[in-house]
Amino acid sequence: MFGYKRFLFVAIFVATGFVHAKDLPNFTDLAEESSPAVVNITSTKTVDIRNSFGGGFGDPRYDEFFERFFGQPRPSVPRENTRPVVSTGSGFIISNDGYLLTNNHVVEGADEITVSLGDRREFRAEVIGADARSDVALLKIEAKNLPTLKIGSSKELKVGEWVVAIGSPFQLRFSVTSGIVSAKGRSIPNGSDSTYVPFLQTDVAINPGNSGGPLFNLEGEVIGINSQIYTRSGGYMGVSFAIPIDYAMDVVDQLKEKGYVARGWLGVSIQEVTSELAEALDMEVPKGALISQIIEDSPAEKSGLKEEDVILFFDGEEIFYSSDLPLTVGAIKPNSRVNAMILRDGKNKTISVKVGELPKDPSIAFNNTNENILGLLVENQSNSSSKTSISGVLVTGVDPEGVAYSSGIRQGDIIYSLGRTRINNVEEFKEILKSIDTERNITIGIARNGIKRILSLNLSK
Image (cartoon, rainbow, N blue to C red; front, side, top):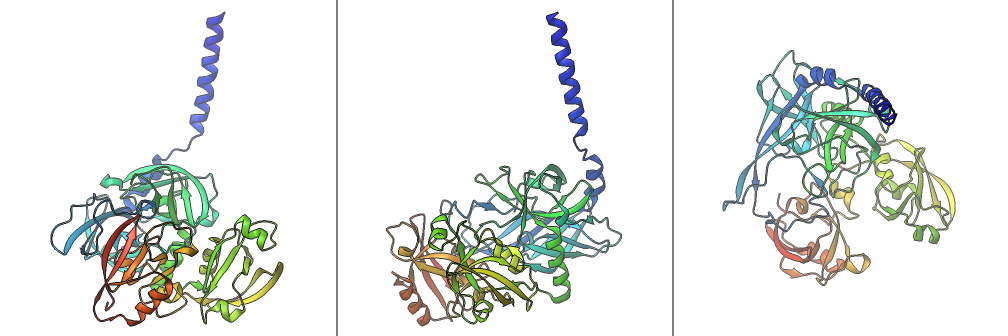
């Protein structure tokens, strides 16, 4: 009798497992039909290594938080001032006459770009347009009758929905991985200027080399471009991010039409509303974006917004976290007039705001003064949570297209000297900045994780 019961239990278990297995999605048709339009991209560029930090000087809070997918181990540093760097990534064809999409960081600054198809054909590619803020690049190869992918809608995507990625992780070309959508509208703190992208978060296995490849729904439609991962090891850890295809295609349309991407701009510095701040501001629930600084002559100033205002709704969209505001404002067409609901002095108030256009020179949008030609936001250490024995100013923001960023300075660094002059506070930093010679290289001393380093800044670029 015991054997019969055991047999019956196993039979039921197997039958139940069979039903569940049968209900799982089958990706074979999707992989077979879509793979021909997925490409491998190899870019070669020459980099200046004079300002490179050696091994061990990277800041794990920023250098490892979001790894870019170059797909190549870091080579040893030669004695020359420059060296060639080969980067690999993925992409996909969107028109049969040779237009394709990938990530900007895959091809940024490349001297030569090679696109490899699944049938072993290779083409030299031209960058038609690129946008660093969204990390989207539009390429063109000279070919006809190419296979293409169908563009879907990321707006229709739901959390929990199955998705599939095809790309070339670790140069293992045309690999297929699957998972689900974990979240939508993510703003990720990766130290770069990507706060305008409402990322899709998935648990699809993404690794170095997948960057720029397509993310599909089960209908075989592209609903995202794989862009970044969260990692402490350099490889996949269960969290990956993709650029929504609706957002990416809007970028593509603007690149084709104008050659650049126009985004809405408010001109404020914001911070999260904590429970302590909520109590001080007479708020029942800690939510919204607290304005900590208003840029001079910005749309915010002209509209009558003030420091310590809390933006609760903007253009009808609720601002639950402070990171929701850049996503909402950036998606609005410049020169549009919208309403903002704010909390001021404990009372809700509606203000009409004419949204401006995010400046092409990000340093203008990044600071409240044009005198900061480095593209930095700094503050006194006493005004921050930073604890260090090194005197200087804390870097709280870095323009990713500015001089400071290209020289290796990152958010969280301590600047302790500029032009061989010691710095103790923001006032000294600004005074020294006014007097420096912009026609020559100058030195800047920074500390990261307690380790000091001298870099050079080329202000004449």
